[in-house]
Length: 72
Image (cartoon, rainbow, N blue to C red; front, side, top):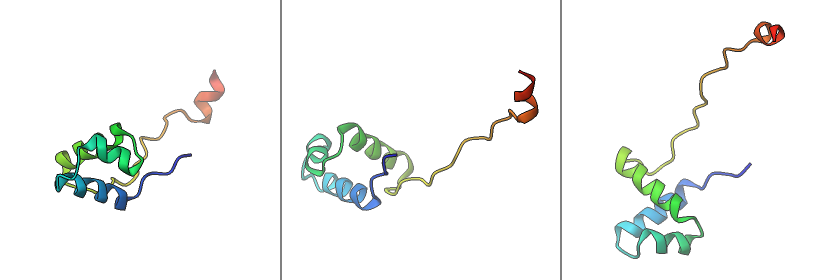
């Protein structure tokens, strides 16, 4: 599985953008990430105010147990 980008990379990219060094597209190319990822983290910071990524939260557990699966 692919690993998540570090919070340090997020912080560097967003700080460079805040300082007006370049556009998000140009910074994405400079840091070797996709434009979509750069836009996504910028939008996430606008929504939440946080630079760090959110911790992983798995979804709800499956309601299908072994009894239900055995009936099919």
